[in-house]
Image (tube, rainbow, N blue to C red; front, top):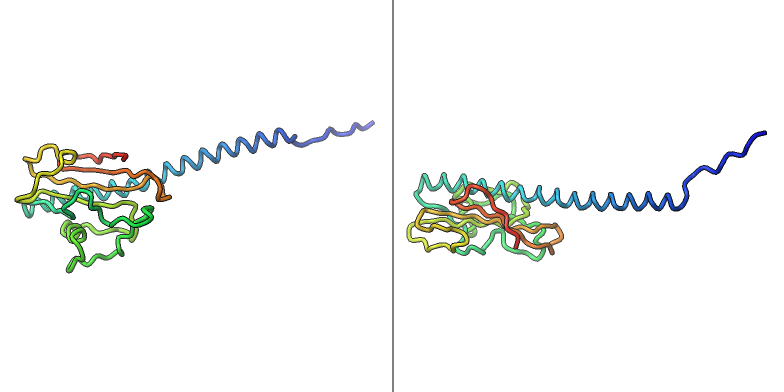
Length: 181
């Protein structure tokens, strides 16, 4: 006699376990992807600050002074807009013959141009020149030496509501420092 085969398949409980496991794995994947995106975006700021460092030193060797893109350590370029997820440089080509503002004039003097139309950071650099005022000690510890500092401000996420963080580099330190505000 032939026996009837037992019912084959999954029970509802087994299917629910599979769904729960997939949900946990997807949460881990989304979190990991966001961390990866932040690290990738942070590299833009680090690369730009390293470029500023190299160009500031070259400019100083030629003209015996450093370049400033602003007079205030809180006056970033591009200016703040309503959603800080991405700031526009104002196009990929700057008019260095007749710069429209001090920031573009300073970046043109350094020979730094944007590589893309959009950026994840706002930048500034302030440098020593004859008669320059003493910088804030949080940026330069020894103002008796010739100095410069650069800052890049970005946001941790692309939603525009994330906490800002700052990348900073100075003539006194050869590494980029990350500060969370």
